[in-house]
Length: 223
Image (tube, rainbow, N blue to C red; front, side, top):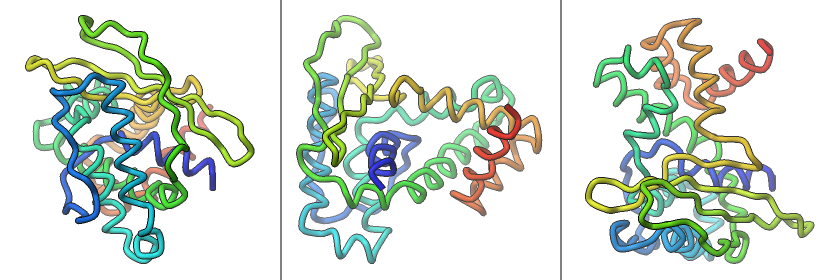
């Protein structure tokens, strides 16, 4: 379960699309007003505030749980850029409509697969490390550690890029050295070669997390 907490906390940065807002979740400050480390700390705090005291209700209503993820993470994630990175070379083959559908379907699959893990999230689980990047650069990393029940620390790094208007948004998550974008790009690449991009999107739209599990299994078996 703690492994799912780690993944849920990290992968909530995955491809994001708007959803109804849970009333108890605090509104997120505009990303343009914050440095990357402030964004990550704010997300950790908002997540704890939204979940604490509501676990029983959220366990019964996953839609509200997923809406918290949208409310907390959506303002700070570069949707278009992340989905293009996950599609890799196939992004050039996809139509604008296919890229949009892929982003939405992939996000829905990810959140439904890992949302339950966030019910174990509590304040203090995530330690945001001091920021050593240069805000004059266009890309930087924010390093954090997730504290497990046994006291062990799992390193999670968030990759950010600065937009043309100067705002910082995340586009990748690196868990113990493994890139979320790279991991899923390999799986998506194998699946597109197997069934084609349109069928992949349809599988994600109709099968959701089951399609993700199939992709992961096929990718593992092929190695």
